Length: 309
Image (cartoon, rainbow, N blue to C red):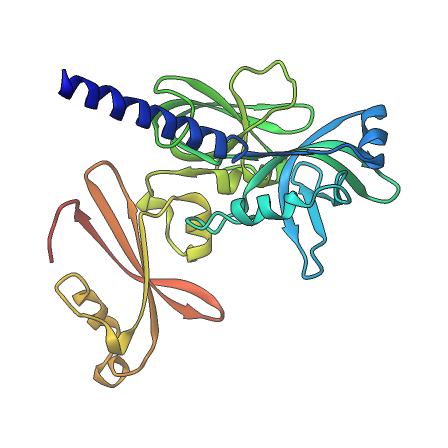
């Protein structure tokens, strides 16, 4: 009986710990007004509006919200700023930039908009997670506010969508993805405004060139393209920069010797080494050197995954 009592005691302690953890983290992904004040009461009597976009904070602690779809920026004013200052603490915990990708974090805000003062009276903020998946292109379509692309999901990386789901990604017409898209790495956020499109998402900043990239590079289409142009179309799997005079010249980097004499090899010339996938089994590494403020390719090497040098 004693072991049974110990088991039940441990189970109760675990249950209590889980309950406390859930309680402490209940608002980790959302901020809302906690107290009533004059501004909040004014907000309740007005029309509520929801927007999706990014937030920046200035040195004077003023916050500004940018809506990518329109490009408009509004000064954010929390309606309970005089009553409860917990919004700044919430943002300190959440941040405005994704530490892993260094990309802006997206938020769903709700409140009242004053178009004359370009101010947004803030009632609540919800953190939106950026999702990633690999998809097979189906078709393009045009909408009233944005163009769209349909994809069948091949692999859900950190996304809420499942394999074989069909999703629709919205983006600005002037930031459409490469027309030759096929198997793509997709980056998107959920679109929360009411619409009639099933599984509708938006590319970050409504930028299809950044949100929809070919997973596999196409060697026949890369001639005379700069690194910036290639990264806009294809999703790289690795990137490294090193001075030529400090390069570890193994068999892998031996082709670099064909472009530099002995004197040049002793110079700290910066080399950028970027690797893409050609298909599931083959990689392509391209080396770039900076010319006229552009990273220009000068050598490349195709190799099989799993090779050791």
